[in-house]
Image 1 (cartoon, one colour):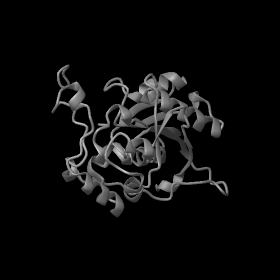
Image 2: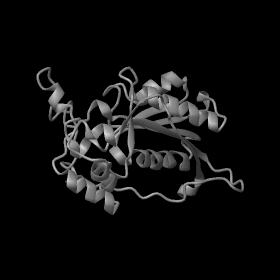
Image 3: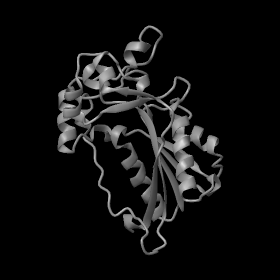
Length: 240
């Protein structure tokens, strides 16, 4: 078995959302368009509406992916959602999406691997398909990071926004011109766990009414190191 046994279709959820430009951030924190572009290449990010959750964006992306390849929700055997901003810790965001889609035949679970989440989901789905356990997998990466970003921290707030993407993977039929996953290589470096964290709500930092606002903010102890790791193509701490 190898990864070439899988074809895929990718789509992006272009949901209605509030655009936040670098010029907007200049009014919020001590930063500049040039500073952001030099370090990230980001010009604009989107912020979801207050009543639009991670599962809502993921569902929209999934529906477009299914439409793109002419499949029905009932055709899906597996749903994997990569997210670090789930609707709830339990049930999983994938279960909310499964219900919204009507994908009654699909097993569903989430994975948490931050920026690398989509790649981890793809690799996992490929294994299920390659071993013959599943025929059709729907993988989704969705985040509502605006809910955990500290908008007063210029080193991190410039990096994040909201959105979702989805892909359908199936075993290859061998037809000419068929796309495929040629190879994947994943890894992690857990020693970098303190570079970028969302500590609030976990068992190390249980959320309380008194602490919820502070503890649920994203927190970077060494943002410059994060930028350097991204430029080098590394930064797989905890998968992200």
